[in-house]
Amino acid sequence: MKVDDSSNYDFRKRTKAFALEIIRLYSSLPKQNTEIQVCGKQLLRSGTSVAANFREAFRARSTAEFISKLEQCLQEADESQLWLELLKEGCNVTPEKIDILWQECDELIAIMVTWVKKSKGN
Image (cartoon, rainbow, N blue to C red; front, side, top):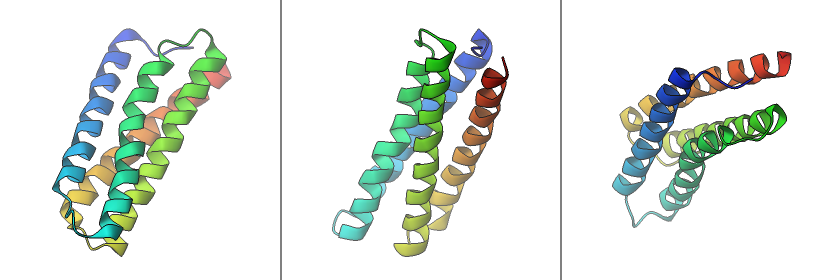
């Protein structure tokens, strides 16, 4: 079961916007702090992977492949939340920058979990 075209398009835009905000956050991080750069690079990788894997999900050749790609999105989103938490709690990056992205990531996860459950039910 794939998501209908309008939901796909809206979520595709939303994950792309999330990736762009991750890139902007990473670009704004202090370059001289090694801890921040390590966490930031990991966040950059996982945060942009959410959008990339979502696009791949809609090129899936089967429901099983679709589910697998969505589950990869979920893993990357969950990992992104970890790096956001580490930047905020361990590296003292301004909470306002982190909290908005963390909340958006949480909402993306909730939507994807629903799609995976519905897809597995069919």
